[in-house]
Length: 333
Image (cartoon, rainbow, N blue to C red):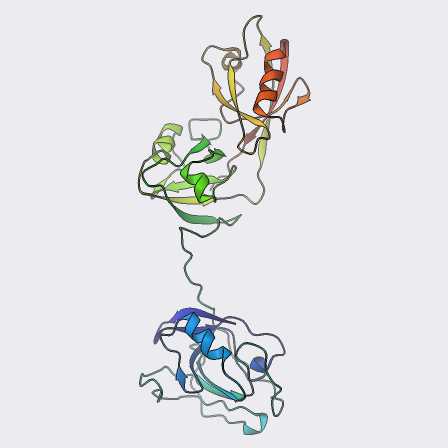
């Protein structure tokens, strides 16, 4: 397999990214990380992946490759014609390209098919000389399309067209989730929802270069609610989402509610606390916060209830009401 990359000395080109074990390419001495300079005298310096793949696919019979291994030191010419291939070091300027290329080049001739479907070699090649491998350069990820990989910080960009992202989040150093900013919900129809990559449980580490690791909720809110053509975010997605379990009992006074508002989750399963009314029973109790996911009411599970069903359970509960909730936990970064 091949990949498009860049050589420190000769620039853009094509590199070997994988070699099938036991293949003709392996027996011929090719190694992962080597740069392919030419195929049957057709130069690949400056070539892109599509052109190189097309050239390699149409090669048949005996294939001659010129490759470069930057980590191999120069040595005297070594020839092994009887094994069906030739290795030659210290090749000067490339006759096919007219450009100077670095030392440690190899010319490998064999019955090798560039796409892996090879004919058998005329003679079996002996074990290739041991050479250090070169790390394969990885093309930079496009922040507009790259996926968010669990367990690592990911830089993404979202085209917002001067609209807000549409996120419900919790956290901030002045809240009960001081370790960071965590997404509770991605509002349907918003720019983040249309982008499709952010999801509940993701932590927002930076917004447009501004760190959110040690800021107040208000500062984070102002940063995330900017209306710009494009938003640049640094995101961390835990490999496993962790919750803090919150349990409390609130006395519901006759003729009054609990003093909370709930909103159904986008997928229609379960609700979260969207508002706590000042002076209400929940506010006085002080244990519930916005963004908490409602798990049960007096032992009745509402984890998969619709917004309407959860609302009915809350309204009909009387007296001392036992509530169980899940609260997103941020991982200190």
